[in-house]
Image 1 (spheres, helix red, strand yellow):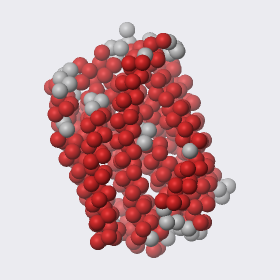
Image 2 (spheres, rainbow, N blue to C red):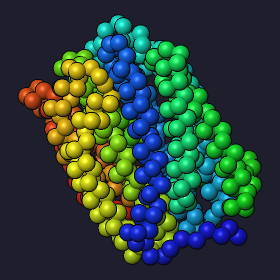
Image 3 (cartoon, rainbow, N blue to C red):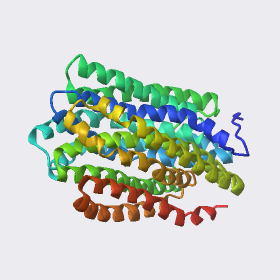
Image 4 (spheres, rainbow, N blue to C red):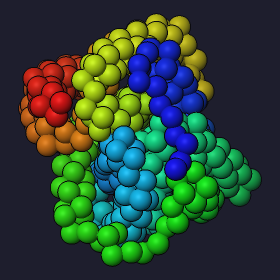
Length: 442
């Protein structure tokens, strides 16, 4: 039998131990976006920065919409782990890899509707639109590799092997940064360079990770992956698709909420797309740090639910929310002193810098407020209470859009960020009132 041991008493120190590797890997993810933004922000005009910001936002919205490939994997793997069903863990991963390849084929086929939709949705110049088409045409072909990486990261989070999940992300991110810098600075490929950087690095990381996972299944779980009849068990496939559909709808609404920021920005002026893309990069850094607790908690929560240990579950909930909130305060404090320096690294366009300085206040305020909803997301994912997540996100984003239409007209760009604060509060409140549904599992 596999020798996989987990503590019965989950302490803050154990959660920190699980979260530390994720902190490092989660720093690498926004660093890729920051490097891309910096590379484009130092070219001769703002068109390259605007095009990359919009195009990458759209692609990320599409890819993150299929974040269930990670999130659904975590909850189901951790619960199967608690039951000692290692064959089902392997089957879950294989099913989601097959699903990710099917989804990737659909995304690639949808290239023309995607770029045509961007032209209709955003108020942009023709020069910017041409650059956007160039970026997306390259980047869209990375979808098979990037979605497979979602599944493999979810596997190791579910197994509470956060060092391995983090290593996968770090390797991918470092390759992405190095290749993008070379292609942009040495070969003058501008937006094509950052797109090719992601494409090449994603396939390299995915192939290396698949080889490692295959060996891990054989050596650690003592299971040889094979295409067996029970792999296509209809009941389990329906359960998987139901969970994935709930998370898909939830993620569509969430990613649209952030794409909505770009839409509102474009209504104010093209420069505000660049300004808010820089602010979003810094918000993303804080989100990825705070998500470290959420990601490490997902596997522990799933394990507690699988074991039906209410004590472990409640202890994990309390400890993780406290850790996340304190970290949010720390991040906000750091931004008070260092955000101007980071903004200056991202662009040398003086007008963009000066305007961006005006919104540093929001960088300080958002992390502690958002920390609670981020952590509740992790708890609901681990418990596979996906229907509640879906419903709460639909309510929150719908109200946020209505609120943002009012505040952006009255307070312009500040109104956009006031609306983001409301979004975070609404997400926390709706999940809190749905918490009792998880308790029924014990």
